[in-house]
Image 1 (tube, one colour):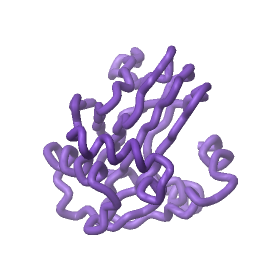
Image 2 (spheres, one colour; image 1 turned 60 degrees about the vertical axis):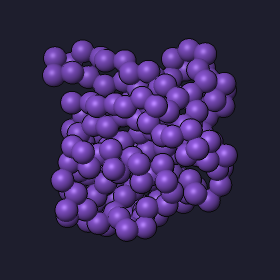
Image 3 (cartoon, one colour; image 1 turned 180 degrees about the horizontal axis):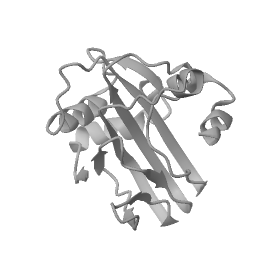
Image 4 (cartoon, one colour; image 1 turned 90 degrees about the vertical axis):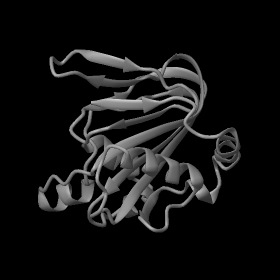
Amino acid sequence: MIRYKDNFLSQDILSLAKETTHAEELKAGWFDIDKIPNPWAKEMVNFAAEYYDFQEAVGIEVWYYDVIGHHFGTEWHYDFDHIQYFEHNNVHLPYCSIVLYINSDIIEGAKLLTKNSKGEIIELDPVENRCYLWHPRVVHKSDVGKVLRRTSYMINIWDKKIDCDFYNDPNRMTMIQRI
């Protein structure tokens, strides 16, 4: 099941998120649960806590895409611990996945796509200041599109620390494309 909330952030926090799009506050990687990096990430975790029990949560994995021009999209996937999978053939899932659209000035496409239990594709609009939340077993992808600007901020919440060093790896896209 996918949940969403419109007008997710207050205008003050949304403005702050837009101003820091390329700043250190959006740095991808691991953050301990008591050191969430910014106010919009805190709001995202609080939203998810309305539906999931995070008593055993130890941290969050954060990444973002800030696209201007052509949005290449992603392949169908589930969110999981990539290092555990590639090194130990173990699939470890987060509690949930969350995406917030900070900027969403879209010409065409660039939608969030999922599939229902019948395998039918569901298109979800990446509306500015909309936050989506879903179970880790929901297959999803980002569609190809043309954008003036589309900034998405993603979080996975975990019950054990995962290795997020690959976010700083120059071969990151190659690694992700293998999944």
